[in-house]
Length: 587
Image (cartoon, rainbow, N blue to C red; front, side, top):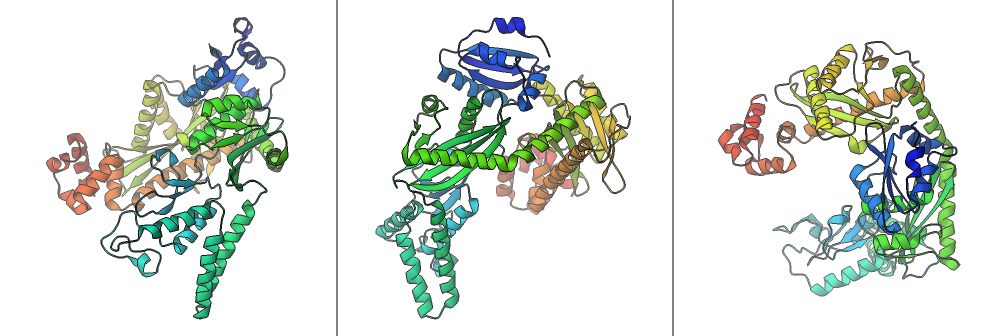
């Protein structure tokens, strides 16, 4: 590690954001501090462990930007994190957003589940978030069966099945009284807010009718529906005022781990909860603040109010989001805040031993790999595999692992040109395209390229990497006759001495299985869409927009094959049209 004493002496004691870089000049961590000098010194003094130790070992340089306030430094920090996506900053484990239930603000409303709330510009009624996706779906299903709302995306020209089973009022054909719709909306909104009186009455009346007419199957179905509603609402009951609408956040820290707990309170009900455990760095308070901002940026909708523990800077978070924040000191809300902390602790206690064991195994494997390959650092690994369609059309897949953990948001798929008719040339094309882009766009280079194969695959990778003037170590995972990893070879074609029952061998086996799964899944997904869609998916220059235009314009594979370059040029550019004609001749 470099000696930064002289540079640290020049750092001011003012607030600001700092950026830590590795040997390749890549920003690997962005932070903020009230006192830049004290914060940066803390990385190089005393004992550091876990994630912080890994960061310190990777530090080659640092920069900082002085700001006039803590809010300004927070805004700058988040802006830089979004721009550079540094490897040591908090990564939300689950890339999915929580669903909301939406009652559309249309003339004839619909009830549905939505995830992409950022696109919402209308005054549609959104309720959630629902951490329990199954509960959200069940709720929508129950309401749609009880209330005859519109079910179709677009109004049809004739009555459909939903009308005939009394689950729609036939909006496409019949005139529906506005008051009927208003009444339905009012009852649905009331139910989503936790008041089940009206909907319970409706179910009980229907259940009695079914029982009187000896339709016992229907009566039992309604009884089960009623029980589902009661269980859902009972789980949400807490002793709060019904007007409360807020999110509440607390945390528990132990050693290098931070457990963050969120409670979603809607209309006085504990609507759901979310927990995430992350490895913490120098200052857990800064990490929680970053986590909160990332979480709500991903969700797309802010709560009306946010309740926080007193250690967090509630005013700073309030100013950043422009929402009200509170730190309760006593009463029901303080007890709820304490309950969130207890839940955070419970989750960490349950998982900490497993997390520690997994982290230790990965660190041992990384250290073993560094010794075997004589490298100072090995973290980011990129691995490749190919699959083909119809025996000719090739597609490629790339997976990325960091410290033997998958970075799924960085996986990539490749369409391969029609001239390629074998695995080796397909791999050449994928590798060249990937690392030419890395070179031209100054993307982060991997510390190691992992090839699915032996000497031949390694030599291809070396040829491409050398031609681009890059210096990246390469290894090959050689399979046996049963397609299982047999041994591992370096880029000097030497077999590495790794025991088959070692953690390092096991981790590489996982990488090999994952890249194969990713490539073959891409291939299968294309085939499952049907012949025409499959062809369009692998044609270079045809993306989602052009594919839809071609499908709309020609409608079938037969008509598409009959079209000449001029016909196709009416929809796509001439070079893409020529490519498409060549592809169609092959099938």
